[in-house]
Length: 252
Image 1: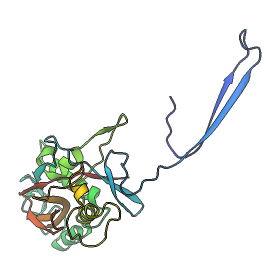
Image 2 (image 1 turned 30 degrees about the vertical axis):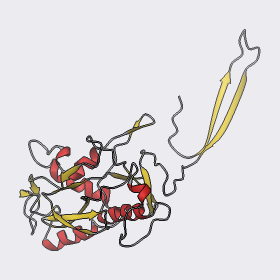
Image 3 (image 1 turned 90 degrees about the vertical axis):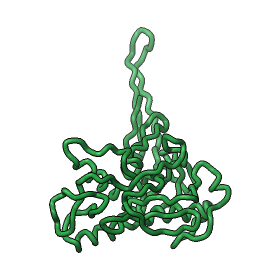
Image 4 (image 1 turned 90 degrees about the horizontal axis):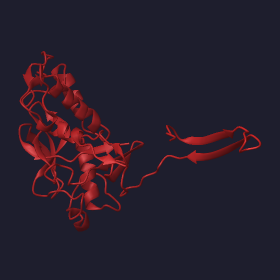
C-alpha cells in the first residue's frame, strides 16, 4: 500500500534481480501526478457534507440535517451552567458560563474578543474556545453532548474509511452564509439573508427547520449568543441557557 502525503509528481521504481526465472535484472519506473481536489459551490465535500461557501482560501461544507442521533438537527443549550467562564475584569475562571463571558481579560478585552468571533473563518476557533471552558471544569469536564459547540464537534462521520472529526459550530457570519445558500443554491446571494428557502433545498437532506432558530458559535455578550431563523433570515440573540438547533460545518 502506498500512502500519498502531498501533491506533486510521484515516481515509483521497482527492481527485479536476475534469477532462474528471470535471466536478467530489470527496473520499471512509473510516474504520476497528484493534484489538489477542487470543489465548487453545491458539491459534496470530503466530509460528506454540502459545499456552501468558498472564502479566504477555504471551502466550507455543512452536515446533512440527519446528522443527529434523532435524525434531525439536534437542539441544545449554548453552554451549561458549569462554573468555568470569566467575569469582567479578569477574575479567575470560576463564573457560571450561562451568565458570564466566554473570554478572559478586562471588559474591553472581552468585548474585542466577542467582536472577533463574528466573521467567516472564526467558527472553529469559537468552538475550540467554548470546549476549552467546558473542559476546564474539574475534576470532570462537561460532556460534549450537553452544549451546542460540543455537539457540533462530536459529529464524526466515516467517509471512505476515514473518520472526519473536525466539525464545528458556525460563526455568526458563517451561519448567515448558510442561510444565503439556502435561498439560492446555484448562486448564493451575499449580505444579510432575506427571503425564504429554495423549495427544493428546503425539502432535501440539507434543508433547515424554519420553525426554530439555529445557534452560531459567536457570543453577543456575557449572557447571550447569536442565533438565526431560516424562515426569514433574521439574526438576533438568545440566552445561552435556551435550546436552539445545531448544524455542524467544517472548513478545508
